[in-house]
Length: 446
Image 1 (cartoon, helix red, strand yellow):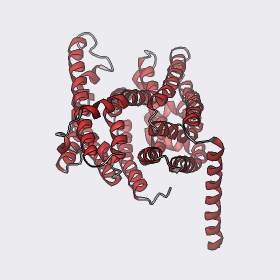
Image 2 (cartoon, helix red, strand yellow):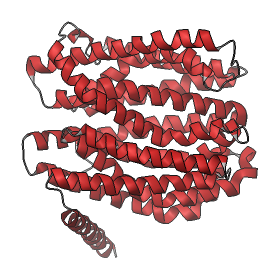
Image 3 (tube, helix red, strand yellow):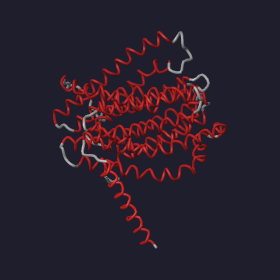
Image 4 (cartoon, rainbow, N blue to C red):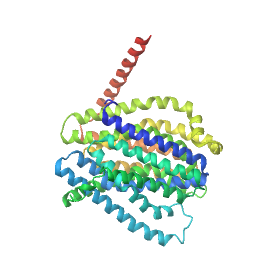
């Protein structure tokens, strides 16, 4: 796997540019809004991400897989049918959420999650075309287009919300409206460029819809479970009267580093999924080779981060949060040190999940994630409501990830030719190759 390969490079650049804009926005929100408002925004955007995983899992992941393994009219019908499914899913959520808001708002006006019921339908329709465009582009492996879409999303999020924070007295409603407006702007661009595949809406196929729903029922469960693994910490902390939104804000800042580190992993996983799907579909040895290559290079990429993180933790945290979090700096440093080990396990968990989806075993990936989720929620409840400890919440992350890796690896061994011995040998070979490569350059220089 070479980074200069266009698919890998475009996927990485798209995520890096998006993350760059998101990081500036994150720092701006953390520094220029109070802990209560920032915590409420984190709770809203976390819930938004969880619900988006339902849509992407149901109408996106299966579409990417089927688009990558089909051609001609079959591909057109898959794109059009997936678009129909995406629209129907968004309409169904709207029909459910708006009456629920009308029913609950008189009785829970200050509830953290009431804005989700009111504004999620708006956010969902605003982002639908550009999400569809990204799914379609990933399916045809046009990662240059995915890169442009993600860059536009990041840029307009920062532009609209940044101007709002600078010019107005910010409120949660104002932040949400600016966020939605930025999504609308990108969606209009995607539709004008015909990247979302709206011209294929006429190619609806009932049989393909059934296939997407069959794959999607597990895929959406997987997406939700995966999102809950990342967001259950936020939800459970927010339910504690003793901790609440300010504690969410404190916990989010060190965990933001994990999101940064996941940028290249998400990029490699995005390019790996269609390749692994094609390799397994064609019953070639490419499947095992690509899996081992993506996994080993991802692990190697994270080793410098693991070595440097303990020495840079205080500087990083102060840079992100500013002086208003100085009273929580020791807690944040402890969290950051705890998740250092978790970072090293990320590639194993990520690519095991991708491989299970690529071999058309979404149900196995769901079972793996369900075990991890139950373990995490159980540990989080004890950490928050018994010990009121954010450090113990971070410890739960390590526990459920190791459990998921062991469970998922056993599933892969049973259904593929992947073996731990061969994977470790490839990892060792790649490490030796890098040592030789850079040692020879060093000797040539001196």
